[in-house]
Length: 113
Image 1 (cartoon, rainbow, N blue to C red):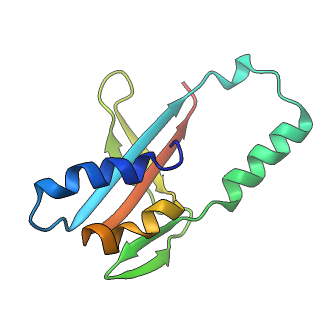
Image 2 (image 1 turned 120 degrees about the vertical axis):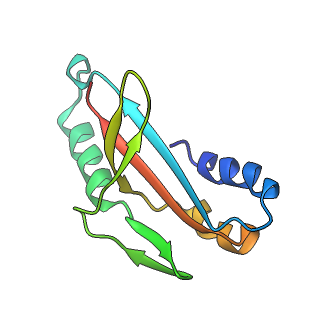
């Protein structure tokens, strides 16, 4: 998800609710990875990014890291359908509970078509 976009989406809908108790934002990245020519360095950097991202969610007012196997199902509609998604902590999301009084979980799925 583009940095900042998840927080913008949540802030945009928050005023429509008296109390926003939960906000889930999901993203599907669909790329034909086989069509790209990537250097060894680029592949190593991409792998580091994937293995190093924060899988924290806000539960009961505390940020808790989630295990790698902790996925939720999200329906992205046609043509992608339901996909397993992993939590992905983003820094702009950490500030939202104070701004919107909601528990926030951001889920993102990297998907090969």
